[in-house]
Image (tube, rainbow, N blue to C red; front, side, top):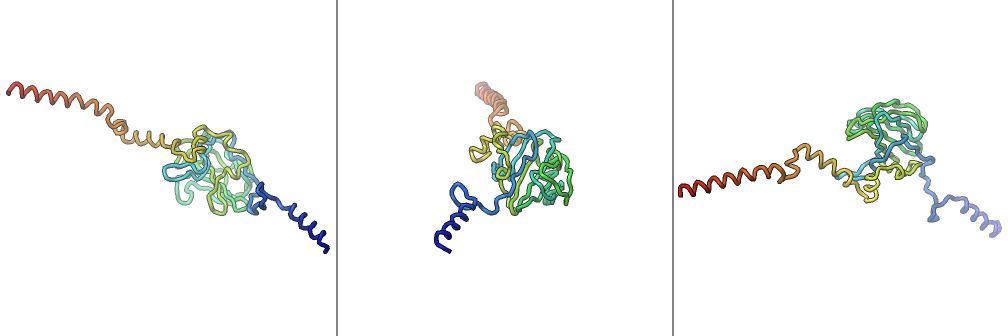
Length: 229
């Protein structure tokens, strides 16, 4: 083959390859489709990676009233539908769906599940209703995503940006790169409730109330010395 024809063929093959902005070939494991949102109207109350004590949040929380319809983010097969996921009750009522390309989605704290293991579901199909079962401080949907068994950020798969529909404190925590500001206040209030207001404030009313009693006792001793001196 003439050199000019060979060069032309090489250029045509190179032009047909999908590339990033950096000019490198597109990874072959990129999901073939994007996920749709699992609910309508929910507000993001916590992003993936937000710190809770020493542990990072493993999913995305959507604050929503109990009974909100929860839908499959993509088509797939139900591989878990239980109230004791992996032997733990913390997720409450939970559904897990296996999708193409090694992806899985998990929906936790549901009020009720409407699918069973082995069911085939389509994207947007109703799979349950939101609630606050398991370890939950309020009604919300906890969504997790997995790629080849590894937990990943669901936001990387969802077709709509989450920042446009998020609570302010969740956005602030995300921008700061951690979420102590979001969760420290509830933990502090819980601790105070457990041990009482006096334990929380230390030298508060309890200490102030004791001071006059002590002063009165000292005054009594002084008067006795003066009387019998």
